[in-house]
Length: 114
Image (cartoon, rainbow, N blue to C red; front, side):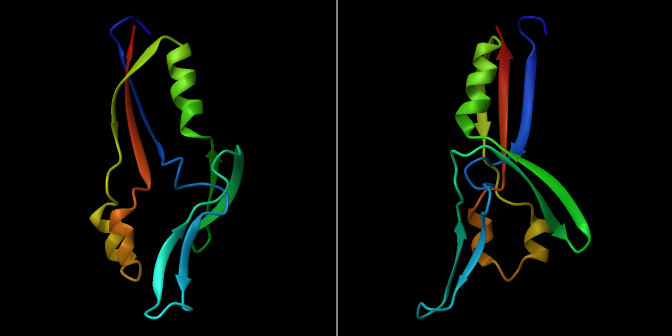
């Protein structure tokens, strides 16, 4: 890439999409609560997950530092980072997880080639 070029990276949020992460319905508490379990963040892994009935996707987990360090070592500078709220379409299908609106599932990174 030429100097001044832009590199855009959209990925599953590395802090929240870890091996073993997922919703927990805690029925022990009164009133019951839902929360997001975070798995071993620093462990690199790839997993196959069923995201819809019969639909499987392979996920590759790396800590955020792995992405940032690889980009800077390749001559890029981070210009912007966004953690968008889940899309309305997702929320319409996941109404049982009201807390999902406050947990970003994706991360957007914008880099400039130096």
